[in-house]
Each structure stands twice: as structure tokens, then as C-alpha cells.
View 1 (cartoon, helix red, strand yellow):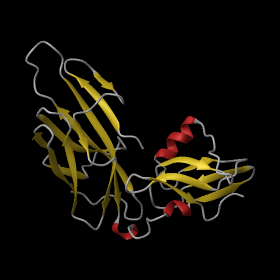
View 2: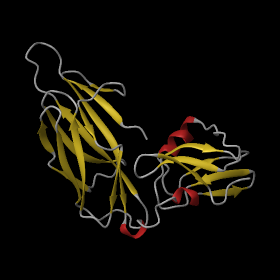
View 3: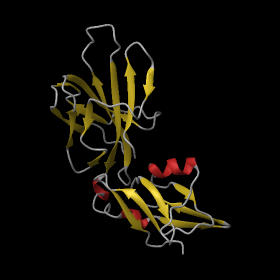
View 4: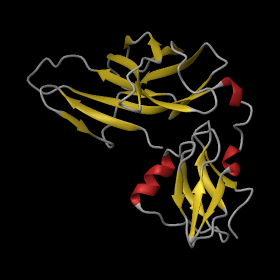
Length: 228
């Protein structure tokens, strides 16, 4: 759910950073690529007063899958201070499932000008989610969080993503609108709740969830068949 940023220090190893201030920023925290479109556009904003170079590319979240799926154009560019660069994301392969969403990383790497002195140059990589939504399921996405189900097993209850969509769930609530507690593994899973994923809610009352919409807004959804 959060934009991930990585700090690159020239001549030093790659360092993860969430607090560093990036010069280049994307215009959204997540992007949706509908299968009916030939491309989508995104914007890299230079929020500094200096010129920066930029590089954008797409990674598969599943490291074992190395097939190229999307290309960005232009993939390298320069942005003057307080300016922006529009780039396109285009699908170049058709191997993705046609009955459920797939997810990828969109990376923006800033490239600073070389230092004139002896100081270190630092560059931050921003990484956000790119969700591919096949054309066949585009119309059913609105409010699909409500369609998650509760699976009942002997002595167990599970909240199941029984939809073809990928959800970014921040909280799960009981019937008194109190958030439920989950272990770290399940909490992390909920932030990228894939089709078929499930988390254990045994002994808990589940009424609603709070999740990110396509536009990056947190919204609350009451399940159609909650646990009472």
C-alpha cells in the first residue's frame, strides 16, 4: 500500500529508505492497466530546482517469472527543475491470466547530476504497484471487496478473496466497527490480497474491510455475507 523508496549512494551498497526525500515523484501511488486499452500514461514530476535524469521500468513481482510483459517509453529522460515528464506503459505480451488480475512493480529511478566536489551523489528509487486487469473482468471491479467470503471449516473460519481482483486491505472490522488484530504475516498478506488468498479469522466477527480504491482512496466495504 505504501510507495516503496530505495536510496542509492554512489560507490556504496543499495540502501532501503522510506524517509528520504525524492526529487522525482510519480503522479499516483498505484496504476491500473485495463486490458481493453493499448497503453496508459503516467507522469514523473521533478519536485526539485535542479535537473534530474530518470529511468522507468516494470518488474514482475514473482521473481521466478522473467518473461517481459510491459515496456515504458521513453524509458530514460531528463527533467528540468520543477517540470514533469509524461511516459507511456504498453503491454508487449499476452501471457497473463484473462480471468483474474496480475500485479507488477513500476520503478522510477532518479539520476542526479554529478557532484562537482568530493561529496557522494544519492539517488532514490520509487516503486509502486501496477495492476493488470483483463478486459473480461473490468466491469465487475467496483465494490468487489464486498464479495469476499467466509470459509467455514471444522473449528476454523477464514476470510477468503474469492474474487478475481487484487485488494490492498488496511483493516478488517467487526460488527462494532473495531479493527481486528492479525499477525504480521497475515497483515502483510492483506496489503496485497491476491485472488484465492485467505487469512484465519477463527473466533472473530468479521463485518467490513477498509481498502484502497483504484484511485488510491481508503474506502470501507461491508461484506455481503459477514460473520455475525
